[in-house]
Amino acid sequence: MNYVGYAVIGGIVFGLFLTAILYLVIHTDGRLKGRYDEMQNSVRGRSYTYAYYTLMISNFIMMALFALNIDLPLDPYLAFFIALLPSGFVFGFMNVWNNADVGLNSKRKTMFIMYIVIGTVCLGAAALNAALGLMYKDGKLGIAFGTLLCGIMMLFLAVVTVIRNHIGDKEEEED
Image 1 (cartoon, rainbow, N blue to C red):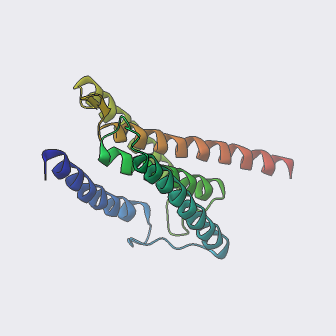
Image 2: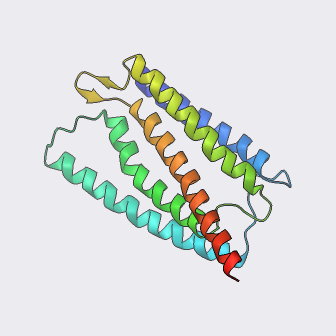
Image 3: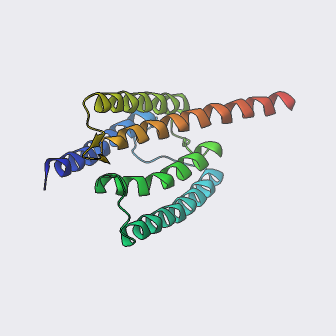
């Protein structure tokens, strides 16, 4: 395994560890698992389904590109990550838009702040990666480009949250 492989494995382990800590911070009862009402569980089930089909389609597209020997300007690690990313957008958007992203035992404001903080940190890391020349090497986008994509996704979820809340406030004013 090369140093990029070690970095990817280390990033995955660190990400899982950080996620567990963040779940403990978000949930009011100190549990890792969120509690959801029936409507939220229904939405989350549909979100998982749509995200799964999105993942299948993006993987089929990536497989077809590789099968056709199309030389993508991507590091293989990044190609796998890019195939995963659309399903993350679909799952996140559906849950946020339908108010199923924050469980009954979760702090809504803390979750929103985390979207912004994580997105900003990722964009800052992406800027650092770009400044150090780690994003584009040997004519290919490297795994460091994934940091930029993560930052975009998290800030996208923050924007969707703001829009959803704004629409919800307008509906309450009309009633």
